[in-house]
Length: 227
Image (cartoon, rainbow, N blue to C red; front, side, top):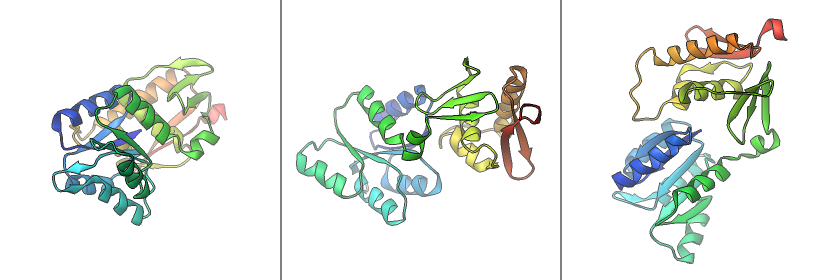
């Protein structure tokens, strides 16, 4: 899951990013409306967490721009303004939820999880590929009921591939799902994660294979012997 945090308070932005990171989420952060526009239109996010009062404008204008462009990414507004009228205004201008400062990190996480539960995911609580099962709600994998424990980035790679099983996932798309805007990405780091992941899946007999598609990306499908 990839989250865009738009917050001009650097300490709060870093705290939110750290908390989201602990929940296996990839985070982009923007400290201004200008930065937020660039990130929001250049990358694909699952949820937006947007502060109202930014140094160069109102965070609600970003949500309005995205809605006019046909982007329906769920957006949660953070603000120090707690009046009912302001909550209504935020919702009327395209926000999906509202949280007044100060707030509990636990409540914020719960609200993000709710926003991320898209209708397609609710209708399909689990995805199967070979003997591998992905629980959308818990964001956990198992093989024949036995939990598959993976390092954070390998889990994010596998999640992106399983959700597009049978279709090639472009390399840039994988990079966006695994790394945040501020992460240090080495030229071969994605390939290393995929290589280790492929070896683990083969070792435990998960019944899936990850194939490189030269010049494009990667494809996950059921292993021929397991089909």
